[in-house]
Amino acid sequence: MVVDALLSGGVQAGGETVIDKLDRPGSTLVSLLEQADWAILIDAIQGNGQPGTIRRFDQRDWPAYRGGLSSHGFGVLDALMLARELGSLPSRLDLYGIEIGSASPGEEARSEILAASAQLAQRIAADLADPIR
Image (cartoon, rainbow, N blue to C red; front, side, top):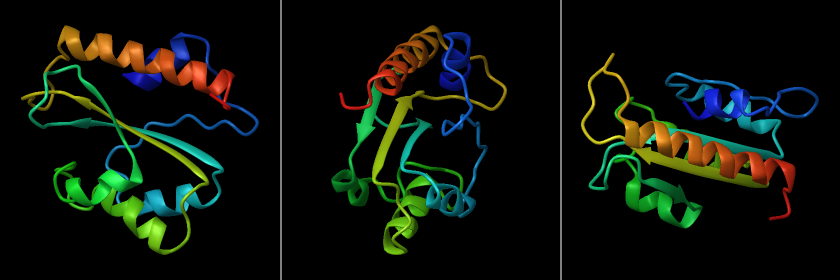
């Protein structure tokens, strides 16, 4: 939803900018990060927060959430920790999660999640326009 909001808001891929949707990339994420100087990753999270809550995760936060941020087996955090050990992390990495509450596959997104996706897309678009921020 954030990618869709970025694209509909006028952010375009091309040149050095790659915009992609990845469904459970697992360890493939490591090779995708190797060539990047800056990566922005967004994932749905299920925790104790209100649906629509946006969380930013710093590398210092990763150990506390290991095994808790993904239900996809080898999740995003596992891939990021492996990339860090291999020296493959980009120099800048922004990791965001949007709290989705309880959700079932195929269920339509709640209004809070749609609003959070649009809000995060605006934040990312501003960062892309002025990466020094």
